[in-house]
Amino acid sequence: MKYGLVFGASSYEHEVSIVSAIALKDLLKDNVVFIFCDEQREFYLISRKLLKSKLFSSGEYKKESRLTLKKGGFYQKSLLKESRVEFDVLINLVHGRDGEDGKMASLFNFFDIPFIGPGIEASVISYNKLYTKWYAKELGIKTVDYELLRKGEYSIKIPLPVIIKPLRLGSSIGVSIVKEESELSYALDVAYEFDDKVLIEPFIDGVKEYNLAGCKGEDFIFSVVEEPQKEEFLDFDKKYLDFSRTKQVLEAKIDESLKQKLHNSFKKIYADMFEGALIRCDFFVIEGEVFLNEINPIPGSYANYLFEDFTDTIRELSNHLPAERKIDINYAYIDSIQKAKGK
Image (cartoon, rainbow, N blue to C red):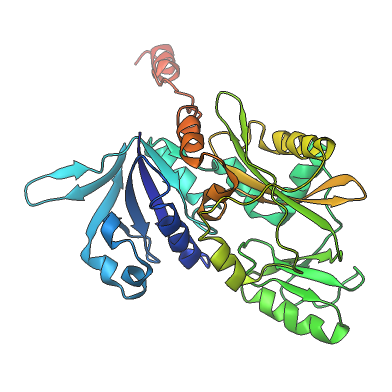
């Protein structure tokens, strides 16, 4: 199996995507070609040996082959011809906007390119934290209380302490915990820098938190359950380091009953909606009840550190990607109208 790995793009999480790509460079034992999307949404073919952070921060990537996205894949021009970049399956590793909001999925579907990653509907549901809560509610999965504010609004109803999140952003960018009234306006201004809508949730001190990743091949493939390091929350700098992880984490010490509850909630969330993607769900457990915190449709470095055999997991997923329904156009309707008119 040969993979194409797309990363970068026009997103506040652009740099995190680069870190994820570098982390996966040596983890995917099968052949990989690296396709970088810059902030101008131009695509470049990046040599494995050049895949280092400085290549992008310096702008040196622009010396590499520019690619064109066309039917069936990415193409590069030479002096006399145009050749397709060879891969069997594309992996969407673009975090945040472009990758997780449905743009990449739309492009790949339109140009008939098989890919691993959330589809259009799954992207829309998981990219917007409010839509995620609505989705969970329809599935019968609990979420914590919330309040939505729009830019310019500074009054909240949820009692302090609260956590403030930009509505459509990950990696803890723009996220703040507010414990005092005097901190509220500043924290909201920070969040409004990244989105014109923000989500307010109660900050629950000491809550149990668990992360579970997985996908569906012939059957469901689950990672180990991770209990993240206990801090109030992981800020951007810590998340940045987190995205570069390649060493498998220790499994959380939980009983089989709770593990089964987490698996069942994950199955409901994944269902048909996330078919073809490897996702990570972040759960809270409050008084024995499972609550969905967030869905990560393209987790940092693809949550490789949660799987015993990441390469086999990706290969199994690659062999069970959803196929878009083929629609045959035969113009029978138009022809029948023309015949009825005698034309």
